[in-house]
Image (tube, rainbow, N blue to C red):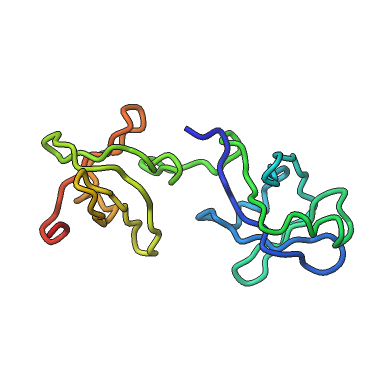
Length: 169
């Protein structure tokens, strides 16, 4: 499991006082209001950045980092990812998982037959959809609903599924 979780990507600067626009990659953008510290991945290093202020603009978050007070100091961080440590992540409800923990899990049918590997999770609004690459290399979309996803076990790195009619050719 990853020790850090991506919460956003800096898209561009905002104004001239060192603020940045962040596209949130978290289910709950309001979580930024509670953030005191983030890890900024420059591609060469990860820097701890103290969050001075946070506000929202449409689907973006406007962040101001402590000690960065002009556009020239923050320009270099465009397109950089922002992370939080797992211990500072939003607490999940029972039967919820971070997407990063699901990617790469083995998928088996309810009788234990290997089916494939979970390669992506699409967030559709109504429910997530698990993208599974089968043993034959085909891509299958499985709705993340209790009737289809029977068990997710991070300890055994396995997802047990029931293939509902019409999901596979």
